[in-house]
Image 1 (cartoon, rainbow, N blue to C red):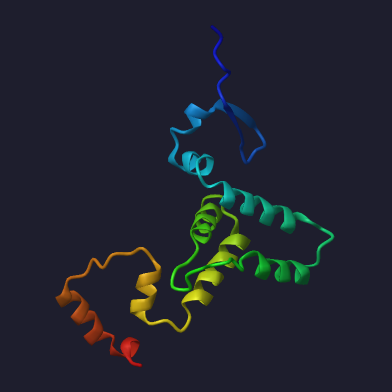
Image 2 (image 1 turned 30 degrees about the vertical axis):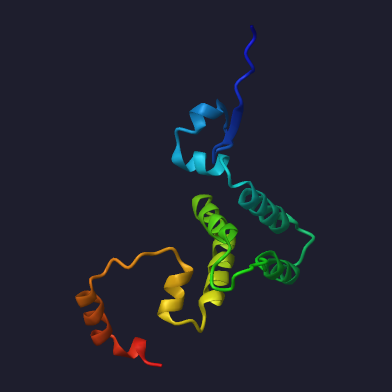
Length: 148
């Protein structure tokens, strides 16, 4: 009985060295696992972003227009951010793509602009870790932030 060849992953280091490793080996790294598994749409978007920004014939102004359209995600619920945006933020951070980090961070900032703290906490999957006493102290010490 023959066995199927192991799936391989090709990695390229910052000094241009190429490493071909088995997928099972790569999956031992949480960072690589995240990049390999179930985030194909985000990966494709990151590659699309990099390709567009590598085009020397495209002007900076045209890239800005393209960027605005690139992060204009269809979102059926305006009270939540699309999951693809979170995946792209994480990929940009891990891969240190500053332009994409700035672009996605600005998209999040635009999305939460004008929203109340309660609305913002509903958008992000963050649980309140403060006790009611701690929250009351914060509100009292920072009244300016809670004024309408």
